[in-house]
Image (cartoon, rainbow, N blue to C red; front, side):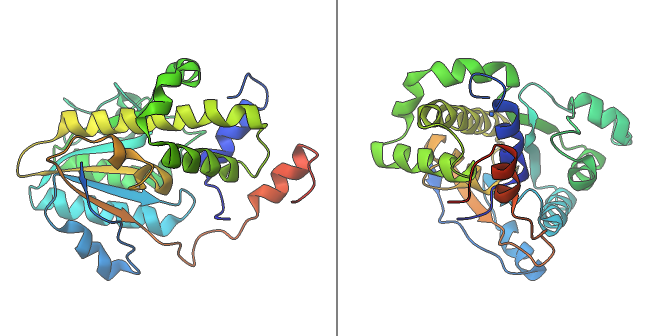
Length: 261
């Protein structure tokens, strides 16, 4: 099982005390080093960068890609899983400081450490490129959980795979009855990100999305909710040696009194 991301654990922790609270797509490439950052810079309408949230090398690559595209005048916008739809730096001066940018994005430091994502964001702002919140607003999660119409946005096999990913991503700790509602939140998030990307698209330039690897999965994630006709590149960075070797599931099972499977 792939280790769940930091964000998935935060969703599970929040959910423990509530009702359950959390195109023309290219095949994903898996760069193996900084030299492969250049491969991510090939022309595209949308560039989806999928990361392991607790791998600092992934965030360094974000910054490198954003800086390169912005310096070439090719970056139309930077969209973030790490901020909610409606939050934007549009209109801020290029010299805006970190505090001003964080306020504009309504940044949630508890969920997303600014030190990890700030360099890429500030690199975009410094070049006059808007940074956009792309994630489903937290206030929309309960409605998404109950929206059975979201189940039809994936074919049955993909929907089953999405629910299985939710189960594995929550260390097999979610009750079976919560898998479908939690999968709907994931689908609603993917749809929100896709809508943000489409709205920000500019012919001849690239909109970049920074998100967890699951969100950019070409079979289950954001690419499934994009309209045809857009050139989409998806990059899922491989784990680096600098990612923390932590068994998050062991700690959560201990916390919730569940034995290891």
